[in-house]
Image (cartoon, rainbow, N blue to C red; front, side):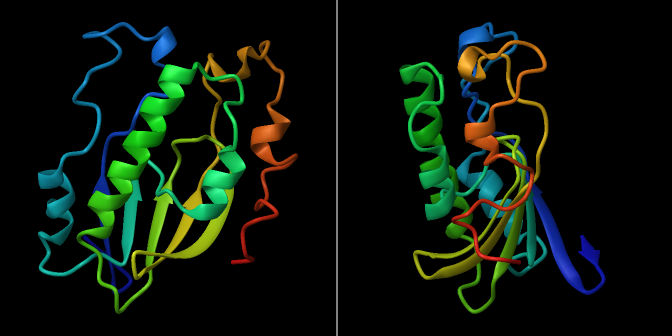
Length: 163
């Protein structure tokens, strides 16, 4: 797909960090992560896209630092999600063009985070968009904000460069 002379493509799927409230086979499936073949599909237009819309976020340094410790997630679910994020990042990077910066727009962690990074020689700019937090996050009461995750606002984190 092309939008104003920029190629845009999408990659669905992400690791469910809230598996603790999901039911295997109903609300959680082992096949929830994008495959190598699906990542290769980003090249269907003949070239690496300028913009990738994805549910899973790339494992950029500032985001990893911001996610920090568990924030109340179950250790097994957190380990699963972190490993899946690394696999997702490798899959996306395998099809990007190192000669151009790629914008990755994601929403998996449901808070705002902007960051530019070079991952394995690939220049990327990631824009996480805010949304609702999961029912498992920090076991927060309804209406209670997770300020540690949100950085106190919906603006960029302190570790993220200005856009």
